[in-house]
Length: 334
Image (tube, rainbow, N blue to C red; front, side):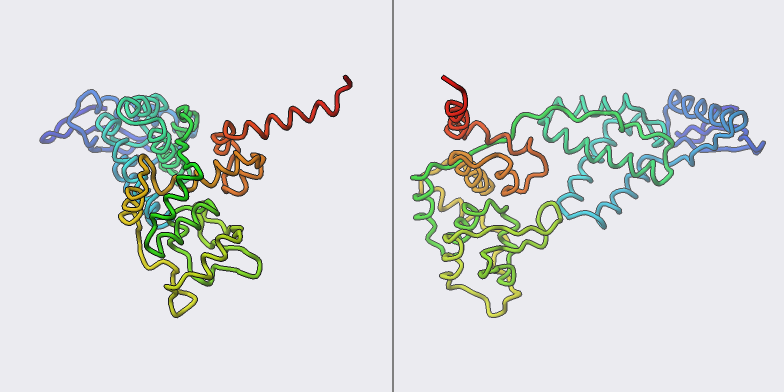
């Protein structure tokens, strides 16, 4: 077995378990890395001869990333596919410069990626990118591109509680008064009273509105599952009174792809700062919590996957918790 160089690239020359001579490009100009690749081939030959363990076909990390991203574009939503592309580009930049093949990557490399990203981005960004990397290796193992999933035991970083920004009742009135455009006012009313996300609201059609049962039927929520959103009387009246209705029921209620510009203008007129469209969802949850809604119920209304996501609102319901403790006074003997 030997290493030789052609141009700037190192090649390895060895005999496989079947006795065939193999000449293979390492894809690198780094001699030390080429030596590591050759040593790995030697180990694979011994394992196959002595233990009957067949080696996994060597796959370049860059090639497997391209395969995964094609899968991501086909199977995931555009936003998720973009996150995957960015995460794997960052992973390749940090780890790929020293590791050419996917089965050379170790758990230590994944931890290194996590630590390097944590130096420049938030823990939530690290968690999102690590989730992509972990799924990338899960699929690679399933597709037979690596014998062991090196990311399986790597844990996501601890994340700080998510941002909770909500408006007081008087601020909500100011915001609604500042929504001089009919479509914007309707959007804000729906968001404040249902907790729906921006994309969900803008994607609504009149067919989704069920006045008889006071429900909004969501066919494609964030989780990809069907959801029935409860409408209160405020939402029902706002929808019925909306004048700018399309001719067909299968057309969207809102004719705009985005409302950021008009929403920003309304915030400025209302004198409200540091507030985003998504914070309307926090308003919905925060005021429910402050009015004593139990957290399990709030979890269902917010369509959270775990109670952990709902716990960010727990500190907003002190009166409810006080009442629960006060109830003990009716139980314990004095």
